[in-house]
Amino acid sequence: MFRKIIMILLISILLLSVSSMAQLKGKLEIFSWWTAGGEAEGLQALIDIFHKKYPNVEIINATVAGGAGANAKAVLKTRMLGGDPPDTFQVHAGHELIDTWVKTGFMEPITFLYKQEGWAKVMPKGILDIVSYKGDYWSVPVNIHRANVLWYNKKIFEENNLTPPKTFEDFFKVADALKSKGITPFALGTKDGWEAAHVFETVLIGKLGAEGYKGLWDGKTKWSDPRVTDALETFKKMLTYVNSDHSARTWDEACALIVDGSAAMTIMGDWAVGYFYAKGFNDFGWVLAPGNAGIFDALSDSFGLPKGAKNRDNVIAFLKVLGSKEGQEAFNLKKGSIPARTDVDKSKFPPYQRSCMEDWLKHKIVPSVMHGAAASEGWVTEFKDVISLFVVRPDVKTTQKALVNVAIKNGVKQ
Image (cartoon, rainbow, N blue to C red; front, side, top):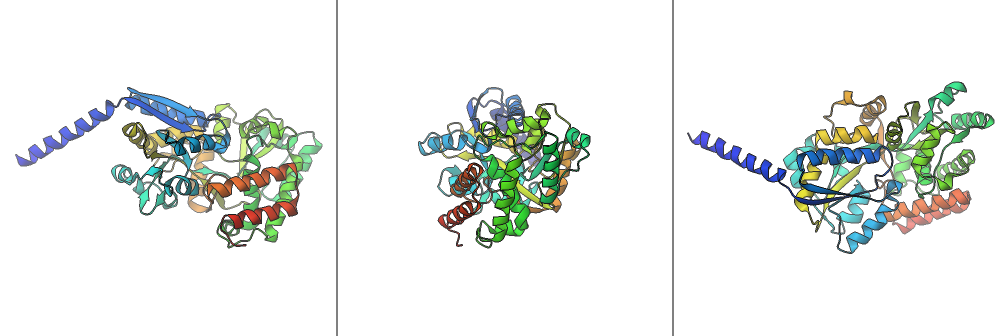
């Protein structure tokens, strides 16, 4: 009899909880920079799931255009410092999250959600570590992206009997062959300021290897290293093969050149595959960026709970959707990334993402600098600015000296 009463009470509590959540009202502002093809569809997939569960909550999709958050981060900073935080916002897991918003006291820990939802059991340690600080979890990773991918137009390569390049030597041979046929070898967009630094990040990895690259951010590798000089010289040469209108194009507009066959190759994170899916373009191939064999340049998009969020209960409900198997499958199928959860149905995903899931488990993982995982936001901004200037004035000696000075300014001895 006593056991029966306990069961009735538990069921009643559960029903009340479900009922109260279904009756959530008010608004939910979701702040992000997901406006391009693939990423916008991924966000909408999450919103659709949330709306089915909580139909009485009004979603405010507060997106700010600009890849990698180039513009959104400035808007977010103004709002956070002004005491007007969005209910939840996109932030790269790692230094961008912890250094910028957690250590400065702007976020609530969400360890209670990890315990309730069992996320620590279904997410890899590498991801859990970068959303953790002082024993608490601070955001929900919705994906794992790979930054170091070379995408190419398969038709162009087949028609010209070319093999996708795996080394820098291969890259320049292929680029010369394409250039001789009047085809732009390498598509690049530098309009938002971060894209060139993204490509250069992969060149650094290719020249320094996993450990050498990681050492740049903690002082084990000096920015004066001859391998960095080599990376700058190599990148300078790569820039001679890009489209002449790169300064007027964003990352997705550079990918459009691959889609329409104007250009043959580009180096971009795997949000590019989400863009290709959104455009109905399937004639793309991929290899790792030159010299990057066996290395996974990683980043993760995540969302947390700001202190003072106007609709706290709605944020918690949204974070549960983000961390759910249903949410992660729906989002990543559109975005081109892979779920942070390891218990998803891999058979639902296209070949690129399945290969990425396999590589995540066996390749050496390095943190992306341009996407907030390797260094503080201030360092990332200065790194980006130095490389943006290099695109305009490719002076290797001056640029390397500037990179040394940026490292010293950010507390890393040289």
